[in-house]
Image 1 (cartoon, rainbow, N blue to C red):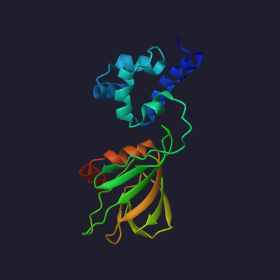
Image 2 (cartoon, one colour):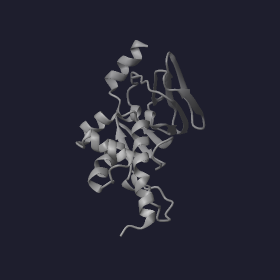
Image 3 (tube, rainbow, N blue to C red):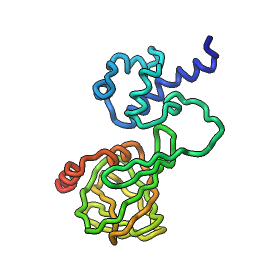
Image 4 (cartoon, rainbow, N blue to C red):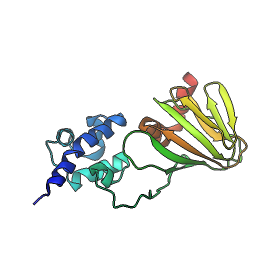
Length: 202
């Protein structure tokens, strides 16, 4: 027999899933095609008309890149530590420093040493981004401007402006970044060639 509190937890899953999908700008049709779960089932799951099951939540957990515990809002075990799982994208390492689904996410970003000066591949996405340089010298390109940020300097900018991050002197750069889910998707999954074309068209 289910505990009354279990019903409250399950009732909250649907709105949480809907908020995650909308934050990421994903349609039900796209989500259905990616997960193999029918669009009607996903819609009923988000509206609370379908009870969440492990079979339904596992593919959503993978797509949204969040732990199952976060999808169902399971209470924490009392351990406040965040279990870091670094992600590598386009040669850069992203270490998640927050675990709350939705909203602003915090990452430590590591740009590896670059023996040759790279040609920027500009990116565009919705939102704002804040960064703080921990180590190294960051090369920040914003539209037609190029800035060099040493350790201890911070920057904040509208990400609808074409931008790119790299090493200013070829050395390793470590920085903290805060951005919303739109920003996460653009930095971790954008096609470099497409980003470059988008930046050049501006």
